[in-house]
Image 1 (tube, rainbow, N blue to C red):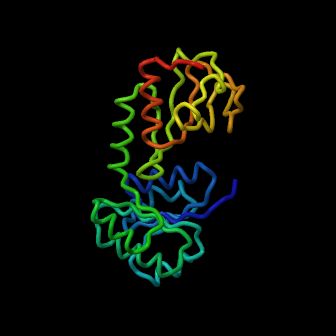
Image 2: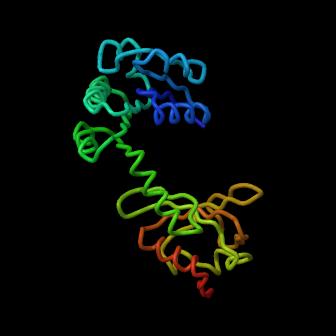
Image 3: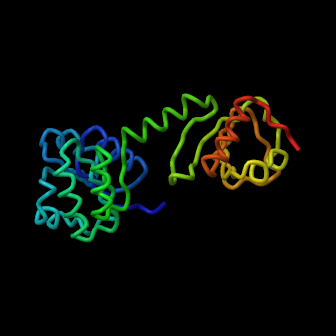
Length: 226
């Protein structure tokens, strides 16, 4: 896997969690925060951690921010600082800029600035939890767009021993099983002959309507095999 360089600006709960996870995935991470105590706590956990004002373009330039593959603006509840920092990253030519939004209006402003991706941590987590609550087989949910999602579904007892050819998710529901997590490992792009086992985890991509139909039939254990 290619090692990328990330700059995470704002090391609050969200930013520090994101930065540490990027480190665990083998990437290089520069953490930036105005709070010296925060930097002291994160210093040994990241590649580099510095106390700096990210709204100061000269400070960012001195840190070589334009050379990073991705800049993440994870500033907490200061919308003005978030926007100013994002503008600086864009003007300095950072390849990819991702920013955390606190409100819908904040998100729209970030989009107008030209952010590559806007993240709504609280809203997105709420959506994912809601989907998990109403579907007992759903383990995770990622929205690709307003119409398409990727979900992880646990294989119920009714599908144990069934092959993908017999299940035919694409022809019957329109969605595709792109991977299966099994006890022995992950099967990427499984063949039609692949057999499902109870408690395997299916990674499925499709439209919201297609996946919803598939989930409903799984929940009710009423899938009729061809």
